[in-house]
Image (spheres, helix red, strand yellow):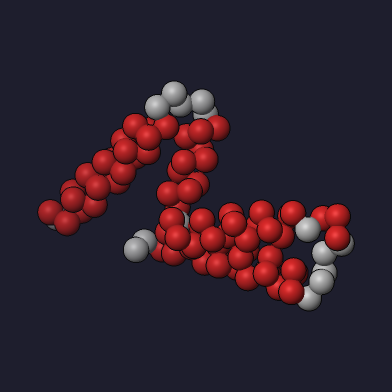
Length: 88
């Protein structure tokens, strides 16, 4: 796991923990309860998938028709870079 991926995952854990804490300690007004709930789901996704969530959001935002192909191409570039470094 890279440092960058670890940062994304720890950000997800922090978001998840803070959303759960806000809900547990009743820090949220009753009408705004959906926000900590949504933040907990986003945090959970970041904890499980790390930087891949950010790549998927970025590919989706830029209007890629083939989001899955864009993510696959990014992974292939990353693997090639790592393979080139290991040969040195």
